[in-house]
Image (cartoon, rainbow, N blue to C red; front, side, top):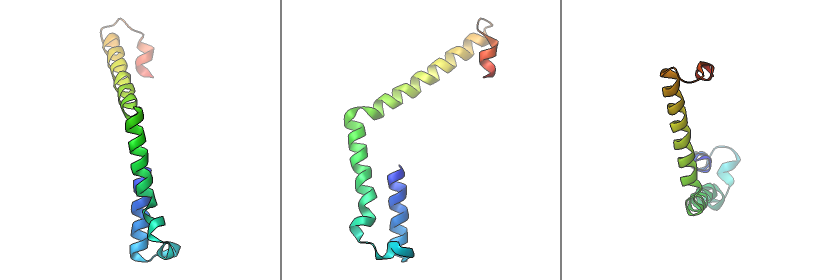
Length: 82
């Protein structure tokens, strides 16, 4: 996401002719978009995206489970406050 944001920023600066970016080549201005595509392709092919999604799901499950245990009065109420 950062690469896309940087790409949009440099693209706007190039189109509006602001600062030193106006003198940069189009290849340099559009490079962050290419890096974003390469990053997403690698993250998807390596399984990083899916692992992160599963990790977030497991964290939400554990938090929900702990909340329910405390609500039933069987857990440590101090954990609820953290």
